[in-house]
Amino acid sequence: MSAGEPHPTSRLGFAVLCLVVAGVLAAVAAVPTGHVVTEPTSDPAAVSGASDSYEFVAFTRSGDLVLCAELVALSGNGRHNDSTNDALVESATLRAIRLGVVECSQGFARVTAPRLPAASLALAWPASSGYGTVIIDLTDHIDRVLNVAIGQQAANEVFMAVSRRPWLHAPPNVLALLEQLRDLNRRLAGMTDLQERAAVGDTLYDRSVLALGALFDASDPDASQTRWWGLTFDKAEHAPSLQSIKDLAPGKTWVRLVMHVEDDPAMFRRFVDDAHRNGVRVMGQISDSSQMAQLSLGSWRARVDELLTLYPDIDAWEVGNEVNGSWAGTDVVGKIRYAAQQVKARTRARTLLTLYWELGEDTARSSLFNWIDDELPHDTRPLFDDVGLSVWVESNPMGISTDRVLWALHDRFPGTPISITEVGVLTDRRYADWWFGQPKPSEAAVAIAAWFHAAARSQPWLRGGGFWWTGQQDATSGTPLWSAIQRGIGHSNTG
Image 1 (tube, one colour):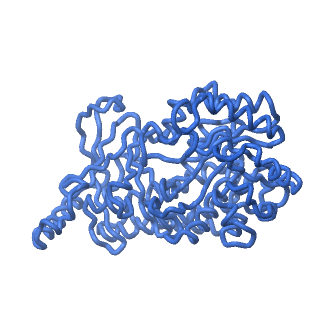
Image 2 (spheres, rainbow, N blue to C red):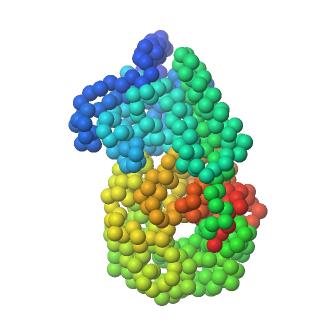
Image 3 (cartoon, rainbow, N blue to C red):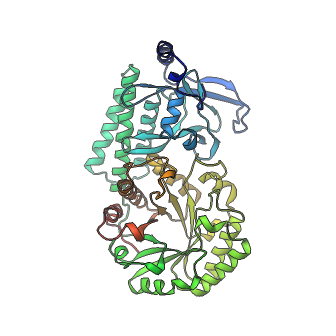
């Protein structure tokens, strides 16, 4: 049964369906945890020339068996093939090997992976707090019940995150959550009933998300170090008081100023002066990613030259926005290289490169780590003083994998501060394929803001950021979103 076939009840009688369900349950129960089927593969990524196949079943939170097509639909939040993000990735590097890897076979969800390099299955999966991408390491000991495999992987992500923070003195709430994870894992070791094991796996996943969030909240390796925090403004001519930015945290803060291609480049002068008079530093964005493709390399160079002439006093320049996005157009590396070189040659401003978080939602080439490894030359990377990540989790879930993703990005830029430099909720809900925190946009915004602002200060090499996309409109002082951002920032100094 393929993922595109109709629900079994549309073509099977109830009695036949019961036999199918019973057969799948019997097959799962009969095969030990960690069972894999070995077979040859033609996948060039399989250096050893062999692959392993892993078969899973899953259960709903009410205990109903989920056959493969329904499993794929659940991963896609009911949007089916329009919202799949399952991918096979290299466990160590998170490079995408292959997309759309879940296959349906006699009710099972089947994934075939090369033995070398070690691979993981990445897919969106719902916790009680919303969807995240779970990166499940495929090993001989992986559980056949997907709920359990996900819960155990989620717990492992938490304990790995703890190990990456040797300086952290975990507060009592974090220690209590860690002990709960250990207890749930011990319970699983002695359980045989599949539905009961799935339920415990779901609880383990939920508690792991809570634990990682609490760990982020507790992690501020050096509250005195300089970070930048701020909001994005994209309508400078109608900019409200900058007080909402000044109030976010003590000290100087930042405004990220979107300079649309169709705007008069000179129109931002008054706004930049007002910001500086109010003690707010300015990051200028040369072009949003949605407009980058409109500019030829020659037009881009002319735009960079004009903006730097008009605004030699801007404090930082975002020389490329969401540059790995498939919509960014051609000559992307040439454009960002020229912009960074000119900023360094003509100003004292910092240079920022913003990348776009995606793993299996578009193409392997545009997947975050593939693009960095394959498209961004090593001799270009020192041109960027900061590297940022644009995060839209309603289109590209992250959740429990947040720390793992940030660590993998740090590995690519070991000497460069990493920030979250764009985050938000989708105003056009047609494109909100997944949800995080709460399905309702205003409540989702609060959860997303709190999560990523806390995550962005949880390592010494993380510089903060935030820069909520609709901050100008939706994060004015005292609003729930503004308060969530302030809580996420915590007591970090800014500058």
